[in-house]
Length: 178
Picture (cartoon, rainbow, N blue to C red):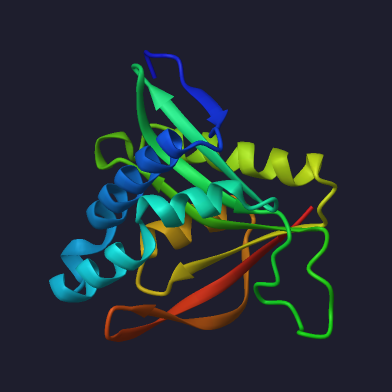
């Protein structure tokens, strides 16, 4: 890449929440709109990427948002949960697990190494938090993302339902031990 990549932790402010709401909605739409019903996409985006919800997520103590900036523009982000119970037996505690809840890169930047840089930073965050594992959910039909995660050593450990509007989809749960 000819321009320096900067990855930073998002501030926990209303301005950052508004930026994340717009960015999240746009990148989710770029990633999934071609494969899903428009009404289901609109319903999910409205329910998930509002500025108030993004502010609540930003201010949650177990949540960290990483912003990827190129050419003075935010072109990707990752949402991390530092106490995830994803794929965990309900009788066990979610301590020492980090979940990559979202990792999105703008379409123009896919294939540039930006997503890999975000993932490396997420894994670094997990190590700093002394986590034993990193987990995530990925849509079973998203082959490109599944291959990406496999290159980082993630392996399937289960599956879960993901509600996109009126459609119930299947996400694979992946885990990488640290």
